[in-house]
Length: 314
Image (cartoon, rainbow, N blue to C red):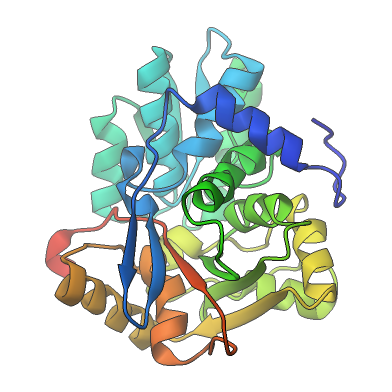
């Protein structure tokens, strides 16, 4: 796959190849239809509690893992995914997390047998520390959102969802660094499906990038910062997403922390599902009215993560 940061970096063929490569490693996650909510894709039930193992497994299987193992930086979910993939493949893993990483996510990483290192106050500092360590050891770096193999792996969500429900017209997707959105956008580049990119008000990285015409630094804070708190969206995903936006097939919306918390409670009250704040962000846009479906829309909502303390919901 090409490393070039343009709209051809990830193609549908790459995503189809990734789906075949990781088919034995991941779960085909279920759907839930609820009146007024659309078709929920429960990627929170994926291996390690989020969509992230799709990209982690794809990069490791596509490139192979050296004797030094793998290294990643993460707010939590990506780290758990890389740790789970490494454990499954029998290779060592080191995961760097920022100080804001939730204890529930740290426990998940340790539970998969990885070595956990607190690498700074923010994700960006943890990333820099992880890259320095990878250069020192020769381990394979598995980036949370800005490598072609990771984007292609995350794009398998869209392929799978389309196979399960071929008639959806709009998909709501939470955005942090944008690997998930970039992969999904690459799959749907020629399908006609429209995307709604949802970010917390405290982490508006894509919103800022679309306004500037390029990835730019943005604030990081609020309820979902541990999973959606990338300082800047990825260079690989941005041209793919910007192209859809220019065609009128991508909306970028922001949601308040109160709306995210309400969506978490709604998932528990109506479906007995525990989602982390980032996992509930896409649904928050729909339930709060931050995004309103156009007439005739058939809506899908990705519930993308569940790595939280269950006592924090409800």
